[in-house]
Amino acid sequence: MSDQALDKIRRAQQGDTSALSSLLREHYTFLFKYLLKVTMDPLLAEDLVQDTMVRCMEKINTYNGSSSFSSWLITIATRIFIDRKRRWKREAEWKKREQQAQGTRSIRWRFESRGEEWSEVLDSISKLPSAQRVAVLLKHYYGYSYEEIGVIMQIPSGTVKSRVSLGLNQLRKELNEDGEG
Image 1 (tube, rainbow, N blue to C red):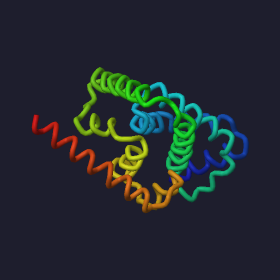
Image 2 (cartoon, rainbow, N blue to C red):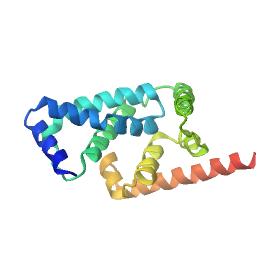
Image 3 (spheres, helix red, strand yellow):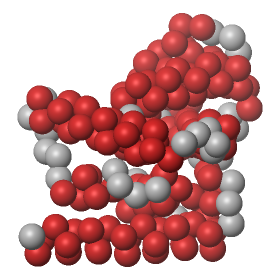
Image 4 (tube, helix red, strand yellow):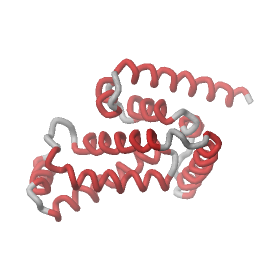
């Protein structure tokens, strides 16, 4: 991390609202794109980004520099997402499937309308259960170790390995089925 970034974080921790605002603006797009991939729902991703930014403002003094600032934000965002999923656990399964399908169509439209590639892999990732999707994205898209993902998701690294393995197996199966048709 650059000295300039560290200085900005230190100033934010000392109550400099301009420095804090600048930090949040600099990381907003990165965080939104991560949460968009995790949730496959643009509205939920936006909501989670806002909650993450609020939590960051409340907890900026707890940032100790042991990880990058973006990793700290991803950890907060992932935990907020996990907490929210726990609260929704009792919702009907059909509603979840419909929201995901609608979110996937919306995200696909966003990608394609901006000339960005929407691949079969992203289509397949969108169909994974969220716990597997988060683990696969953090491991293979963002390059975190199993141990780091365990810390982010507050689960043992063995559980992370299992979720990544299950997710990758499902992706292989899905992509092979699509390739045969």
